[in-house]
Structure formats: C-alpha cells, structure tokens
Image (cartoon, rainbow, N blue to C red; front, top):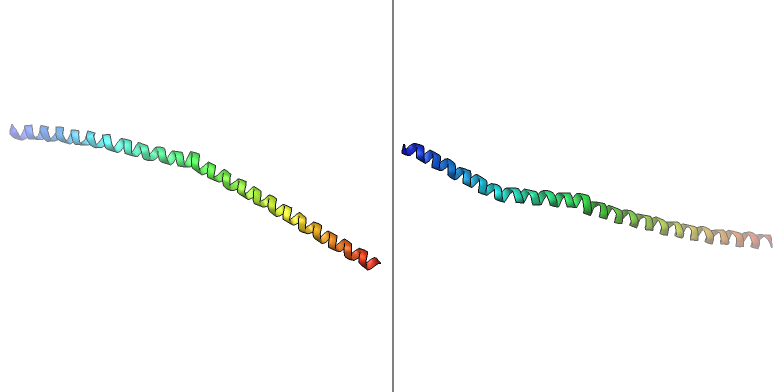
Amino acid sequence: MKGFEKCICSKAINKKVFLSSLKIIIPLYTTFVLFLISVFLIFVPMLEKQIINRKKEMIREFTKSTWSLISEYDQLVAALVLNNRK
C-alpha cells in the first residue's frame, strides 16, 4: 500500500508543480504575444508612415531644386540668345 500512496502523492505533487509552472508560463507567453502584436500593429505602421512622409518631403525638395535649375538654365539660354541676336 505504501507504494500506491507514494504514487498518488507523487502524482499530486507533479500536478501541483505543473499548475504552478503554468501560472508562470501563461502570463509570460501572453505578455510576449501582446508585445509582438503591439509592435506589428502599432509601431511598425507608425514608422512606415514617418518614412513615407520623409520620402515625400525629399521628392518635393528635389522637384523644387530641379525647377530652380531649369529656370536658371532657361534664363541663361534666353540671355545667350538675346546676346547672339544683338
């Protein structure tokens, strides 16, 4: 009978250990999953929007610079054409 009682006691102890380890593991994994969800649903889209806005601003600046150069060369060509006609 003692062997049977030891078996029951060890099963009860194993069950307690398993349940206590679940009390630690479940919140740990839940926290990890929530962190990953927040990163991919909140932080990555915000970062992506910021990068897109920076690229748009760079394109605007390049466009302004290009129009400025085109205007400057147009003025030079117009001045040379006028100088060559005189």
